[in-house]
Image (cartoon, rainbow, N blue to C red; front, side, top):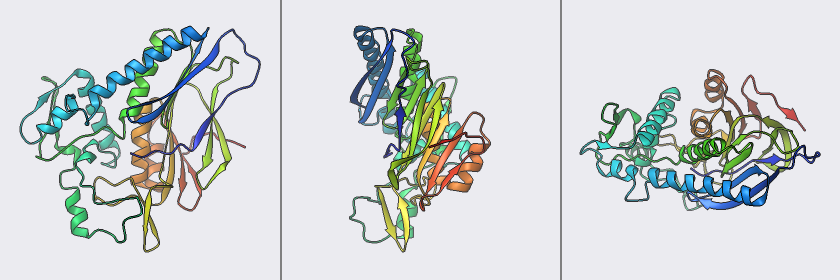
Length: 327
């Protein structure tokens, strides 16, 4: 899933309350830009902590990648319609959580989206809508209901031949969560794992202040409209203002509804605050598919989760309990 970051961190310039400082490294992991920031006593300690996080993210990528022919995910896909595949408890649990999100969102989020035929292009080459028949056939093998989990044997079976699963809508968030958990277990007091828009934080800045995130409207990216504190949790922003097609005056996003095969419309940016980046990542995708009204209604029913949605007219919509510090 394509992501555009419409927020940025606001670092405090206040007097540092301790000898600790922030150390950051930017690199490419899981095919995306990662910014890893830790609070440490010195550069050597900061470098060691960041190395630990990088190794953990690379470990997860090897396990869940559908591009690696030796990964567990590839084995599941290769055996679709043939036989169940025994997997690690880690991957089994991740798939189970993804299926729970599918149920919560009525299938708006679905890891079997990888089964879709790529009939939509968003590089400017499309001149007309695909036919209704072609769109319908493009999602013939999609459906989380056809992912069979055997808890006793830890096997995964895709019932339809040609089915595939992929973790593009949840994998980077999961990696950010796991890197954060590892660093916290190592005693790192504070930090940020920013996985190309999937941002996970803990602790406080060396100044003693909370990490804060500034949100901008993608239709006016030079203007910040809100600043929100992040205590312990994650924030994920998904956007589509650059990747879309327009037919008959309707703007269609690159984010496809896995149930119908039609691109989502009506939203250009969705920011989700949640206890984990994995959950926020999946819900940000689902909101695009569900639309503004249904998306906000669903978020309002979930504890400890909030969202900010920008519709295709530039209007700002928020869940009921979010507290925005306007600029």
